[in-house]
Length: 110
Length: 115
Image (cartoon, rainbow over all chains, first blue to last red; front, top):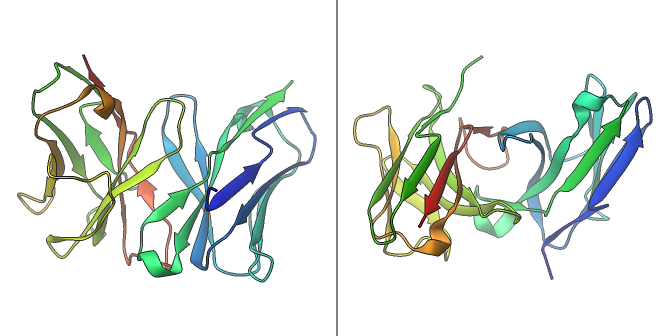
C-alpha cells in the first residue's frame, strides 16, 4: 500500500468550477507539501503545511493531522490551472526526504 | 526570483556509459536533493546532501550513483554505468533548512534517455 494516496487520479472541470483534490497518508509526518507539475515536467512548490490552512491567490490547502488527510482547493478554476497536482509528505522518521503520491491530473476546459 | 538551474535539459547516452547531471542550487540554500521520475510513474527520492556529505539516501541510490559539490556552487549526480532502467527525468531541489521548515525549490529537470 502506498504511504500517500491521492484522489481522484484524473479530474476534468469546466472553467470557473471549484475543485478539490484529496490526499491521505498512512504515516506520521512532519510536513505535507502540495506541488504542481507542468506538462513540460517542471515541478513547482505550492504549499508546505504542518497544521491548519494556507491560502495563496485562488489556491487553498488544508490539513487535518488527526485524520491524516489534506485537501487542495482551487477556486474559480481556469484552463491555465491544468497540470498534475502532487501531494508529498516528509515522514517523521525519514528526515527531509519527500515521499510522493501518484498525482492528480487536472484538466480545466474553457 | 531565484532558481535552481539544471544542465543538460536532455541527454541521450548508450547503456554502460557514465553520465553527469549538473545542478546549481539557490545560493543561500543549505540542503540539496536529487529525485527522479520514470515516465508515467511518481517522483522518487534518491539522495539528500548537507554540509558536504550525504545525509540520506534511498534504496535506489546504489553504488553506481554518486553526488558531489565540487566547487561550492555546482551539485552533481553521477551515474557510473547507465542501465536502460535509469531512463528518467532527474530533478535537483534545494531548500534552506531541510525538514519540516520550508518549501523545496525544484529545477526544471534533466531528462536522461539510455539506449
